[in-house]
Image (tube, rainbow, N blue to C red; front, top):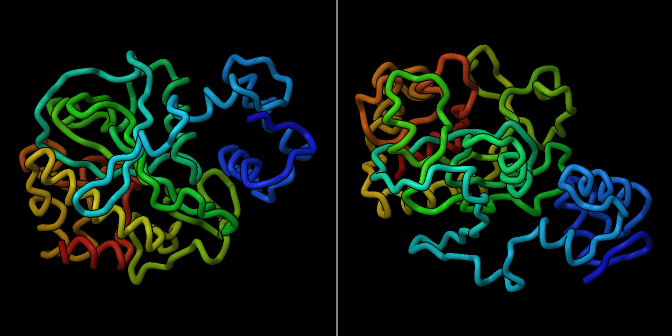
Length: 292
């Protein structure tokens, strides 16, 4: 397949979504410029033409996407999209914790993994979940889950904490979400569509308005949590869920047992770090966790 200026159709839309553009299906000057920029960043000839070499870097190595998709018992589709070796630690190690995070970026989970590939470090999580665009104009990746490195491997994803074992013996998932919203904008200064904003009944970490988790994200996160609980024999009802049942939204606050790794189970990054904002207690998320 070859796409260039003047091309139209579903494949152009897929390309535009990948690049974070408005997916109108028309390969115009804006799309061409975005392709050239992406090619430059990824060591390719910046000709603005999406041919075999560019597609090979943008897409999974298999030409049949279905070969890369695993269906869990809970009905969640997880797509294999591994980082290159050297971008994670191969392990294997037994897993004792599950940590829920946000990405520091947009709605496209492929872009999250590509950013990890470019950073020349072993900072990553095993899974990434896509979301809705804050512009309210794209949900192509909403709830889409990617597997970023092999089962049993690990990477650094918790920052400074009281127990390094949590890095090597945990599973992490990054949920595409910008976190708190202030005056209608994200921390990066991007305007958020009204449909993507949720207002909490009480402030969390000083903020009442946040970038809303979509219904699809919450449902797929439920399926994912149950999948990891079974795959790695992690009691996900210990930790965060216990705190939520006791304290409601305050169960998402910093917790010393989480910081020091004393309580094995499931936590969020906010439980282990006072300076983090991922994740936050949206009511639909609280309801899902309590019902697990």
